[in-house]
Length: 606
Image (cartoon, rainbow, N blue to C red; front, side, top):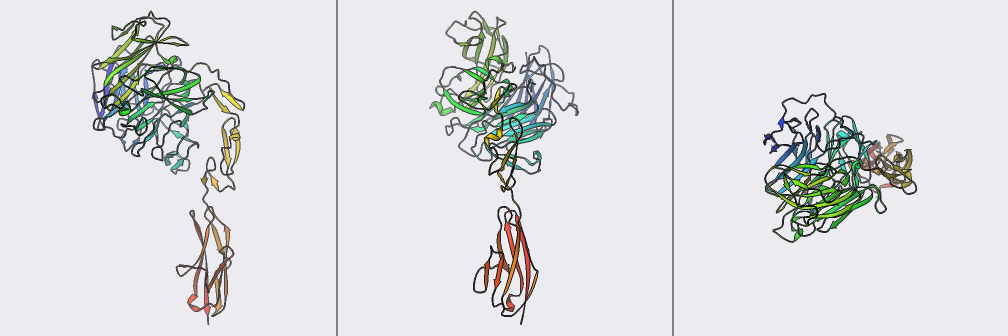
């Protein structure tokens, strides 16, 4: 294994290389290379020749590092494009492309920190893999906060040109003008959907319009594999519990979710070891994109589901232990399903941020307890010893070695003498007010065959193993009296908002219309002391309905002994008129969309 760090401090680029070396290549990225390369259908490793990388925003960022390792036994050259991108004020302007340009593989881990704020975060970057599905579906996972300076975030990075992406948020978000068909910035409300198109390495960062809102459950569906990340710039777990920190992970597509998991406890935490968010396609108790949060005990937790789910584990805040001396702060880890444990050999880099202590939890799927496990050549206690906790699973015995402390830097290798075993490494970095976690190598193969049974009026999608309604119009998605027409089953529909006064995807946006008013005549001559009637005609009341006012000499006319307004304010009667009331009278119809004015001039003669 080779190891290197690409380090970016205060937004300028530096290279920090540790021997043995991964060499940054001097060959530039060709301009016409605008698409991620296809991955072999039977190769699902987190190590790949090409990585499209997104950098999630932190509340404050001092250091951003790309930790790059390789399973190859020889020097590997690589390039990193778009290093001139800027990250400021919570916005991410472009994706990164990390590639060897050959069939040589590398793994990429993103590490971020700010010493002054005692904030740290880390996540493994997955390659964009091609699954046998018609579309790629992702769901955001985040946390909450009780203050307004930080925010829940969802980052999308495209690895191809002309990638169509449909977004359905759980809270209101803003879609920038560059990505809307109208060319105007819009607010996309919870439950509404919009389809945008991203180009090669183009990004979209979503955050709630409302402070303290949580993007968890927001759905992203793409025509091509994309890189999707979600988390929080600096959140509380639980909300209001000191202290707060960055959490974030790359989100795997639904096609790679699983049914069987082992959630391990965080090292060196006294209480509230982890909190698990379960997002499910379908089950007896949860519907698609439902979320269940559950605090579990100090021991590991075995989870088996009837259909594919996504599990994210969170560490609680520093003072959740009611101790100033305990280690840890909010951290987030996507728990891989058992079927994605790679092989009898796994590896990971030791990454210490802000002086945090590093430890690893090991999970071994073994047919029996005779396997011998080594960590960097050191033989660990036998699987039958008290150092390991045993669980039964559908794929055999599951053994957990909880919290092996690590020291130094470099790469760690874990090996079993049984080639049929599979090993998972979960790495934790913990210090006072600091918490982060990441995994070793994974095998991101798709979930097992789908045996899901759908309820009446639902149809099974065997590509994603999800149930969807056969006719979405039965759910009345069109609001405010709009009429729903099914374009194609099961969920492509159109809302006709005609006559409702609303517009938009689901007839929820007010359709503003400027009123239209005119007058029968534009000039009237009358005698001194006589009476005169002025009328205007409202051709369209506008939306919302316009207010009509008469004005003279810059003042609004009201009913009195001289003036009398009737017929919905379209008629003005003037009695005993004098020469001082000669001039222009304006009939004004106005609403928030605009105004229409009809003018009638009166000449009073003696």
